[in-house]
Length: 337
Image 1: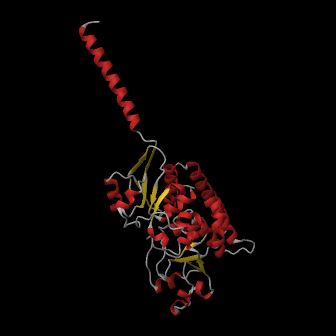
Image 2: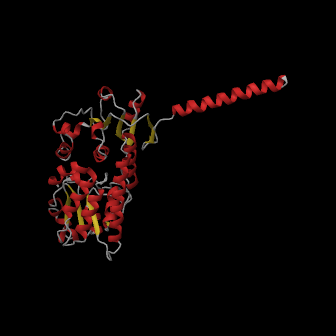
Image 3: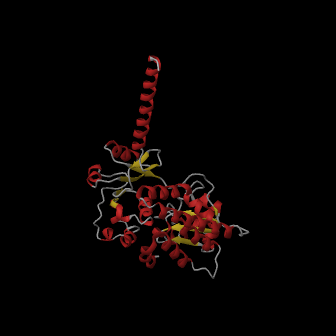
């Protein structure tokens, strides 16, 4: 071997060793768990999170469905004061019932210092609160942001949280169950000859605040086999009385409100749903949140209101859904339906 050949051999060997070491180093740097959140940020963990701070209700709901509640070390403070949330979460978690689970703030207004004291492996936020997410990331906290405004986003959130908490199998069970139930409903509504038209109004007297075609509630209406009376693409458009009269829905779906909000407005008296007293309430709200897997309960109920079947026990069906979604702890919730 001449001198030049020897040098090339040594250089080649060094490059090979260097590449091998780089490959090993890169392999070492790869995390066991990696997902991207709603804003495109990577969330990487060496192992499933054992300490989770969750400041967004639909995500918190998903954690309890995933049976990952023991990993929750912090929640949003509104849960303790909300009549729509506390009675139900207190059944799912004794720490919430005793008001012992730390609450470092609400989704958009949380104490970074209080969160840091909880030593979280990951913090879960609504994607709309990127300022808080950015502040937490700047001090080395892993943050997963989510939004659940569309069908696929609800399932993506469950999928990602299952990976982050080491409950992948449970996550797959939940998603498969809900998707199969939706498929069964589709087969049923495909047989409907003349679809009814439904108008949805949000809670607390906002009868002219509705769900547009680009919303999760619109998805629930479609699965239920009814047409959304709202023709706008917006998520939550506000309308006026004249517009609602022009749409003339066959039924009205309200969320945690009184039908009297509609009946007392004389100018709406000619609307078919009001004349025929076809106003239905998704109550209690907890069981019908369209931004969670409980959108299934919403769709099932609306379908049965639109197309009554004397042999159908809607309350019992919702109870079955709750049992599937929450497991054994769902039994504690059923009496509250």
